[in-house]
Image (cartoon, rainbow, N blue to C red; front, top):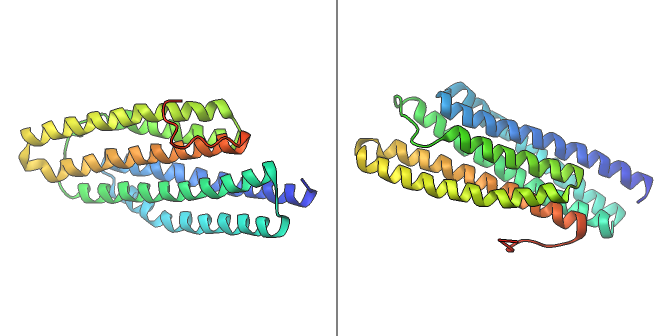
Length: 219
C-alpha cells in the first residue's frame, strides 16, 4: 500500500466511523421516542436522516475515487468493497430508524398503550449486535463478527415470539388492533436492523480473509 493510499483509506475509516456513530444514535433515539412517547425526539430523528443520506453519498464517492485513482488489489480492494457494502447497510439502518420514529409520532397522539412485549430488551440486543458488528469492522475482528452472526438467530426468535404475543393481544383487545399492528412493525424494523448488522459482520469476514459467508446459516 502506498503512503497516499494508506492516508486515503485512513480518512475513509474515519468517515465510516462517523456515520456509524450517527446511525447508532438515531436508532437509540427512535426506540426511546417510542418507549417514552416523545414526539419531539422522534421528529429529531426524522430531521437527522438527511445528514445520514449526505454522509452515505460522501463515503460512496470517496470509495469510487480511491478505486479509480489507485486501482487497489487483494486486501486493499476487499477493504474498499467492504466499506461500500457497510455504507449501504448503514444507510438502510438509518431508514429503519426513520420508520420507527414515524411510528413514535403516530402513537404519540393516540393515548397510552402498554407495549405487549419487552421492547427495551429487544432494542438492547439489536443495538449490541450493531455495535459489535461495527467494532468488528473497525478492528478487523473475525471472532466478534462471527458472534454477531450467531446472535441474529436470537433476534429472529424474539421477533417470532412478539408476533405471537401481539396476535393474542389483538384477540383480547380488538379495539387496539391499529396500535398493536404498529408495535408489530417496530419489532420487524428492529429485526431488519439486526439483519443489516449481520450483513456488516459478513462483510468483515470477507474483508479479513476473503471468505464469502452469505447464505451459510448455521455455520
